[in-house]
Length: 225
Image (cartoon, rainbow, N blue to C red; front, side, top):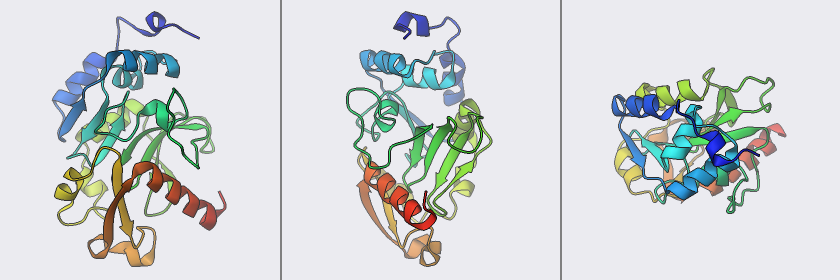
C-alpha cells in the first residue's frame, strides 16, 4: 500500500482541472475540503493526484454543478451526500447500503436519482468508462467517456437537454431547498408509463442512499439483477 507522498505528484491533474472549473459553462460550486480527510481519502483509494479523479478527491469536498442538480463526489462535505469512500464501502464510515457497488465505483449522482460510476468490470467489458444509472429505465448506460471527459461534460455540457424529461417547472427552487444528504423521490416513478410527465408527479425529498437502494431493489425485481 502506497503512502501519501507516493501518491502526490508534481504533475497533479488539479491545475488543469481547476482551470476547467473556472471557465466552465455550467455553474459550479467547489465544496471546501478538510485536508487531513482528503489526504486519507486519497490513500484509501490508492490513487495518484496525477489522475483527474484523484485530484478532485484531494482538492475538493465535492462539486455542485448546475444549481446543485449534479453532484460530483470528493472527499466529503455537509452539502453533499457522503464522499467517494463512503459510497464505495471504504473508510471508517461507509454508507449503510443494502445494494453495495460491485465492480464499479460511484463518483457522482443527480437529484433525480441518477448515478454515475466508473466501470471496474461490472458492465460486460473492462474499459474504465463512466456508466450512468438512469432512473427512467433502471439500466446502466455507457457514456463512452472516461472520468476526465465525464467531468468536462458535466462542466460544459447541455445539462438542460440531457435532463429535459427529468426536470420539472421550478426545479431550481426545489433543489436549493434540499439538504446535503437528500435527493428527490419522484412518483409515479420516472421509469413507469404514468411517470412520463414529471410535472404531474409528486416530488418529495428523501435521503440519497434510500433512493439508491429503492431503485436497485426495483431493478432486481424487474430484471432479476
